Figure 1: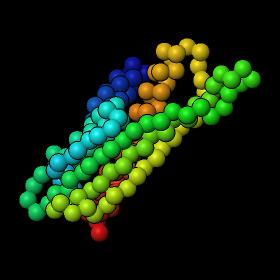
Figure 2: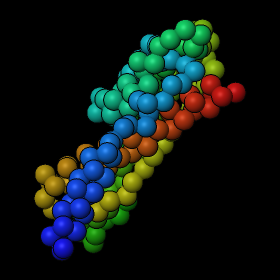
Figure 3: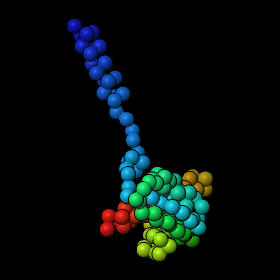
Length: 158
């Protein structure tokens, strides 16, 4: 009896788990616009992360869709926030700034600057500090790309 219940439970579990599937939200959405030409300048790492996010909605062509073009300029800045008594840095602030312009029919309809920052502790292991900075840059760039996508969607809704 117990063995029969275990079989039923395991079969039910397999059915439930295999019926779940992962689908990216942005790639499934059909927008009323498409992204044409996208120009990038500035920091390559930041631009590559933004490019990967925008690529999810770039291939959304079709009839009767507005075609926007983008110009994106990004850069990063690292500042020392605090120092110890010897003058060695204790905390850093990483600022990622992105200026972007959205054009429709070669006319600028939106020109914005986005600044995202993060304060983090210094590390004596420089490799670990560099890896930490890469993660912070990736997270901040993802947030910036989401803001850019939201602004395009909001333009299209108006």
